[in-house]
Image (cartoon, rainbow over all chains, first blue to last red):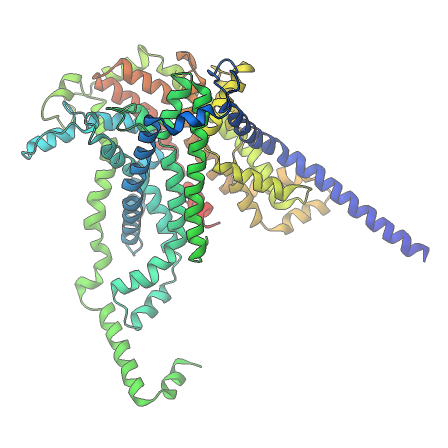
Length: 306
Length: 304
């Protein structure tokens, strides 16, 4: 009897020791990363909430002014402009970016030669620095010396203002943005397409499905989860749109390319209205969060999960 | 039930219909030589498209070897007449570009080294070690991916300013020491890692750190390579934070330097394209060498 008790005690003791060693090792391994990641995100996030209630000018803490910043931003025409521009970018880029990505992925998902070459080409703009690409396209679309206007003139079309024309600048940026991003969409879609078993497509053929029917009833449903992912990813990315604006138009002409992030940067680091900038940043955060949750909720309701 | 049995069990009318369907599908699949060559028809779209996509980079490199007069002729020439290197000498000899390049190498190198160690340690702990609070911590870490940098950047600047980090490379390295994405990548990798090897190591009397260092890490090379490539590309290309955290030219990274260089040399296109070429080449090299791992990592992260 005594021995069994002892054994039980020993076992319990060993268990406790293993658990404790797990606790120590686990925290020793994960601790540094957890402290850095959480420390550099949640602390500033809470601090930003406080800053948004002050009139801080970035270098001095400022005074507590309650919700005055939020009241002011409701009436800020530039913020409305920045919202509209960011929304327009998403509307111009996302549907075409995803559709083109899927179309090219379908072309690549055959026993086709040179697939490695194509994939590399399409990914290069995604990998290269957006700042350099912005500078490059600033030149390509330059109204006077740019190659696009030279081409237009060569075929007898009128020259365009492109990035210097308030009615065209945002669309030009959407095109450049599409160019930088769609390689990513291709690669993600291609990986999803390669997961469709060949037998399923053959079975569909035997049941009399044509090419369109196979696309609608087999391909599209299988890539739907990936579409939801790319939509969320695209939204997050559009909401962070900065590098291209900074290296080309700096928000101009006439604020036609002012995006939310560019506006926040200007407010905090150019105009030194950091408190107000933090308030705008919070509005951006909640808007993007709502958009992402809406997409995910739609996916869940249609029973689409990754 | 085998196919033959199914056929036998079917009424005659259905059977005819079924056979007709198979024949139709067969015809569809092998209709004609043209149809059979159909996959290769994709080249008609893919070839021009891929060339258009990389064209700006080809044009950038060619233009960097042209003189400004050449570049500004209308229509612009497609090929440099001589291999003009004046643009490159402007960049390398009469600007701070060499500093910027070196700074970017230091920051990206430090980021890669630190993330290889810290992300794999954390990913391993979350995947393999049972410790109090691990689930909550993992969820919190992954949730930070939803916090945009614009929200945290203003207070981060204030904090870094107060501790004297602003305008030092430390301000750029500290936020890159580890990342939620890197932790997640390594976590996903270690979850599918065979447990038996570690147990053997434990029985042989190795400590957890020894098991991790001597057994686990050497077998994690593919995942580490992917993490290293992604970290390098991200750190090298970052513009937003360095633009805010660095104010003196000698401490700029290439991306920040590039934007000021552009402002100082407007219309001096041979110099600007030389600078953009030098800025993009390191990343493109890393990508071309490691693209298989890079693609595996980004597609794997989505499916995982």
